[in-house]
Length: 503
Image (cartoon, rainbow, N blue to C red; front, side, top):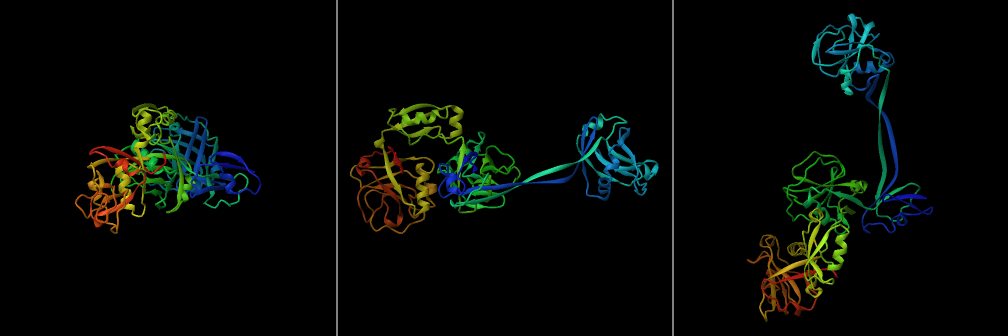
């Protein structure tokens, strides 16, 4: 049977399941998959009618009124009538008989309004008139308003006496309703012509480079965590500890992706399910061109796989040689600095932001020997402290982070690194350690004056932690996994690089 998967046709055996369809496709194993079962088209008549004339087509939108209903009931009589006269104020089509009661009240008529008029105040000679300008007049049918011309208004300036309404036809509206489910059940059975999507694809806005980078960062794992789901949008609050400048604004249409740039929730990424007006607090980061069903139906706690166009052009963590090949795929030139050998690890890239790198067409990659990038592990039990450590080192948004030595001295049982005093105010104390072991990485918490200071313990101790504080002033955040002697001889202001990955 034929199934469409992520826009590509696949031929599967009868009785195939979702597992067969998504084999080899981009997706996170715990993320939702959408299955489009069918599309039903509904066609219905609107209150719009085309008036076909020799000079073109006008569209009349009917009011919800008795006069409009009368006009609709006698379309066959109106059709074929001619423009009996054309003045500066009106175009009159007719005549045809009606049973409209005479009303000699003077009324005001506005441009493009369509209304009944009685010739000689006789309902047997009824006309359909279209106003060309504001005017007051007694036409014998009261207000008699039928509706308003919405399309083809320019024809009122060129239509001539004697020209006929050749045809009157209703304007039909076609709407589609999709029968879609989202599931993680790979045993779900498929049928002919089902359409499957495993991820949402975001086309990023080049005019909002920082906001686009925020989307790239939260989607770096290949998926987003759905932290909230409303009728209007799906939201992800995975990285709120950011500063987002004011960038491009636009109407937040269905499928639009925005990043909040101001107020509570700065950095909040939203995928819109319904259209909303322009907001100066929301930057236009991109548009979905696939996966709207996933975004529309996911609930808080779900995962949605995500891809972006362009992908993230960050070479940090690669070797200089691999980085050159990677960047060339984006048509970005590499300028090597630091250790420029092919095997050196790229620890810094300037510029880092993808949109800026693409615009400039060249980046500088700073390399160091592989032995100078140290492996660490981060404990996830204390989310606040682990978030702080990743944010300050840069590990929150790239695979290699940086620590700058604040204090080091030969023979000292620890080495300390600069932190962020402002962010450090939010580091709540953990349960005090009983013994700090060699290689433990710790942070001074908010209970001490030097909150935010980070350190690595070089010797076991029951009294002091990695940053030199007693147990109650220390939050243990991770472990140095390489040979500890490699950092025992550091000097003040020296920079070291750390990673949680195997490079």
